[in-house]
Length: 62
Image (cartoon, rainbow, N blue to C red; front, side, top):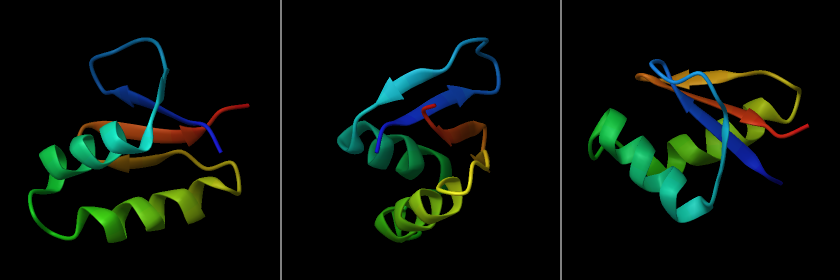
C-alpha cells in the first residue's frame, strides 16, 4: 500500500513512508492517538477516498 500526501498549499502529491505519515499526523492533531488516526486513514482510503487531517490530505496511489 503506497500512500500519497499533499498539504493544502501544495500542488503535487508525494509518496510517503509510514514513519513520515505518523509524524505528519502528529503535527496536525497533536498527541491525540496518531497511530489510531493512521489506521483510520488506511482503512478509509482503500475505497478510493481522499481523507483530510488538518491541512494534509491522504490518498492511495493509483
